[in-house]
Length: 191
Image (cartoon, rainbow, N blue to C red):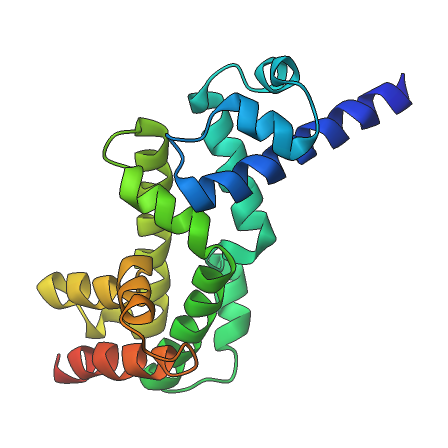
């Protein structure tokens, strides 16, 4: 029975990995169960047994993407990241660098998620969760030095879509964190 359970878990993981990879390339709504099955080397029926709907698959794909390193740091992790950093600029820079690493790890799926969130409620929920997490992290980095409209702009600068727009415009990836940090800090510093 233990072996069977392990086999079921392995099959589920194969399906999720295949789904994330295909969704990152062609979009979440455009990905069908047959292509996921082919990518996972299982039948379409097996995919349906594990995930009877897109709404059941999206949270699993989001969790897998975040587990693969595309998740923003938790409050505990950011506390460790900020340990020994005394200035707001240093904390913002550490947050931006870590966020950019996360975005790069999950770029394809995060991009598809953001593009399709308006039409798929499960994706919209994932985006809202990430938005709340980013707001908490910015508060941890900048404290009360940025509020109101400036806080919204700082969040926009540190969020995935702005990172993606810089990368897509041809900005070298290694330069993106410093550009975002400079822009974000210019708003925090004026507060």
